[in-house]
Image (cartoon, rainbow, N blue to C red):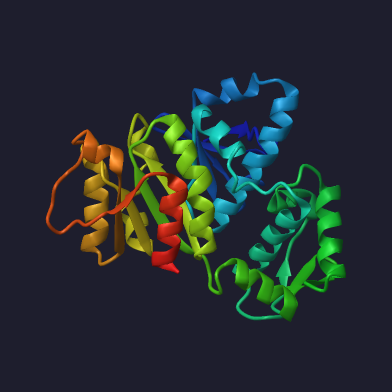
Length: 297
């Protein structure tokens, strides 16, 4: 394996070539793991202006760190980056960034007071999607002053108050893996990403949005990933046979599959008729999100 510099955290790491993707192993974005980047996208991203790269790299490093820490595989291309950077799931305020640190400690703890080591800090400020270690330190001190965490050097513990706050944000339980399967245009994909993903997170699901329209096969979930999920939401679309295959596989594994369908598809006859499929009908993603929250809540 050759060594290459990760664009998002600047670590020089071993890169494994896999088809048209490069796997970046054990960088600061994915410690003890990896993420994949389309080989043709590396130079396209590197050629962006410095102001754009500063904001983009912070968001992407935090995103990769959070997803891989939650056990999700991350495979990126240049076309994916703008949607991720502009997603409402990327924290902007100090409060939301602090909540991500609480959730990290929560995922790595079994009970209140369990010790979690974060060392060194200057390799871990992406835990809070922060651009610098100084912001991470500020967030840590703010959480400590609010009595949400205790800190001794590089060892951190959730207080009872911090545990309750983290648990509430995870709907009172650990976040459960979920796949949302659609066949959509880039604008429709962004709409689902902005309006559906946060609502599913509020229901306790760590959702991954998969697009079967014009996207590479490597982005689609593997049978193992589907088998490990707790929920699959599938949007009916006659032009996406692989979507039906993956949703059917989930159903065969006794995983809860929720079918959805936009009213526009009924009007244009872009539907698959099946007596056992009774989808949730929707007009807007906001409406669909509310109906899913009611059903899953």
